[in-house]
Length: 237
Image 1 (tube, rainbow, N blue to C red):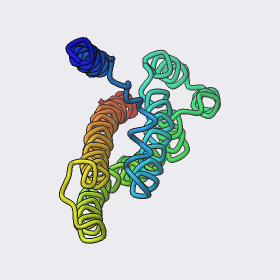
Image 2: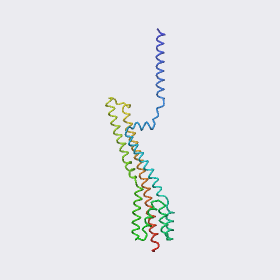
Image 3: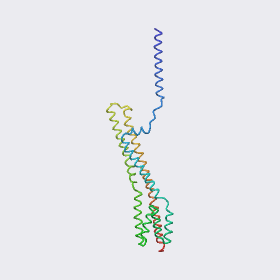
């Protein structure tokens, strides 16, 4: 009987040790890594419009960035050639140079050269009108970036509300307030908020970068236009 009791105690102790070892192994096991794609999926359907806004904002930014950068290239050589042609009296050559440049400044100067012979105010008005058209071309679609910067965080807030609704719905359905039940709604809430804010911040920064680039182009065009008018007035001094 004593041997039987000792055997039972030994088996019980062995079982407890095995259970403790199994629990320790589970505690020390590495946690499953959460991937970026998994986070997007956990954000739910609200991530779709946020993703569309992100793609739209990036496409507009890079398209406008390269267009404005091309328009802001140094045109000092163009002014030198136009000045030399005007001083030599070769007006047709100056017009051809401006036409071949295919730049905002070239189109402005070409319009002014075609108005030579009229009062200087008419020439200034023609150059100013062309300048406004060129600037409006450069600013095309930049306003959409401002809209993206404002709408994206709103979609993130919408995702937050949807996540809270999901939390209460899951609790009412299971009558359980455990972390496993509410984690789905928390994922939606936090992921959509972070994504909306991130897209909004990036779009806001890109919007102001493009506006600063356009302002530099406008300043340069105004400076070159003044230099051109001074060039036309030189013979009358």
